[in-house]
Image 1 (cartoon, rainbow, N blue to C red):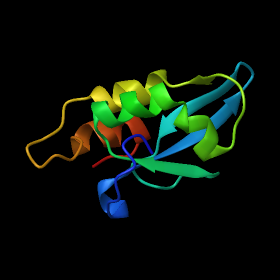
Image 2 (image 1 turned 120 degrees about the vertical axis):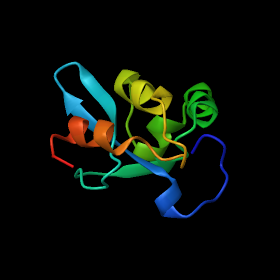
Image 3 (image 1 turned 135 degrees about the horizontal axis):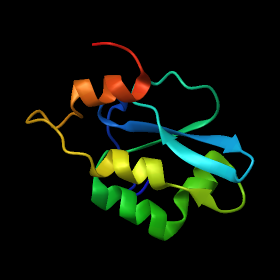
Length: 99
C-alpha cells in the first residue's frame, strides 16, 4: 500500500479500520482474523510513512474522513526479532491469547 511493491501475503501486515464514536481507527491484524475490509502493507516504518503521506489508507479501505493511525504506528515501530517478524510474545499479548 505504501511502497506499492508486491510480496506474498505472509510477508505483509493486514490492516483493518474499526469504527467507534470518534471515527475510524486503523488496527494491525497480524493473525488475519478481524472482520471487515482489509488492506496489506509491508510491516516497515518507511512503507507506513509513505502510505500516510499518500493518504493511501482511506482509499484502500474505502473510508472517508480522518483516520486515527496511532495504534498502527506503534505496531509498525515495535522492535522485531532477528527473523524480521514481530516478537510472538508481544503479538500474543496484544491479541490476548497465550503463546
